[in-house]
Image (cartoon, rainbow, N blue to C red; front, top):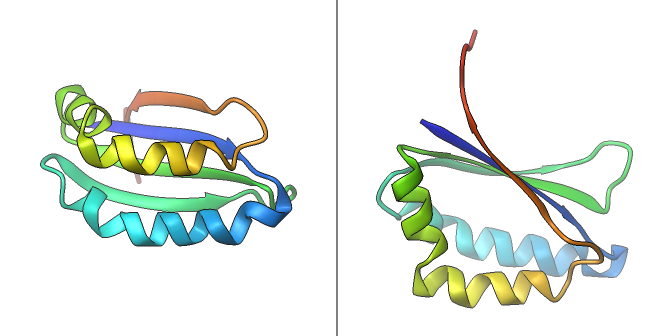
Length: 97
């Protein structure tokens, strides 16, 4: 399983717009083959910083999503709201409780 974490930084004025985009997109993301979980996290100390957190069955599944027409429509809407370059990590879970 791949856990994808993406850090996004927005202007304060763009936060509600981004939250709307995420909530609108979430069911579609979950509908992609191989997506088992997707959630949105907000930094406690810096409310303009968010993280998307998603679980994918494999890197191939994640890449199919990232190269999909849907992602090609949603990402530009999100990207225009950013104040810095996003950071992304694809991780493998080694243990859990």
